[in-house]
Image (cartoon, rainbow, N blue to C red; front, side):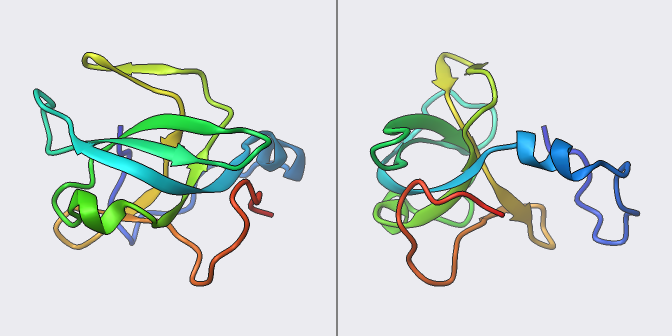
Length: 123
């Protein structure tokens, strides 16, 4: 799923602004996180509240290397909310929670540095 962790990699293919607008990236608050038993890589099943327009969605995140469930609950995160639902093992992931790889390849979540309303869209 992770394409390239190399910070020195060149940029991807040039896209137009209209293409960017097709990707709906929103902020939500994690309201629940539990260990995803049986996952190939250490992962959590997340429940994320995106506010009244989108509601609560499920996501599977490979973030167990850097975060505990307690650290995640109440944290705001960015996610793509308009991808099709994806089967991840026995779980369904309704949104793609976004992050960046650190030097060891562990996922660091992408979050605003100040609280914003749940459902806020990246622009």
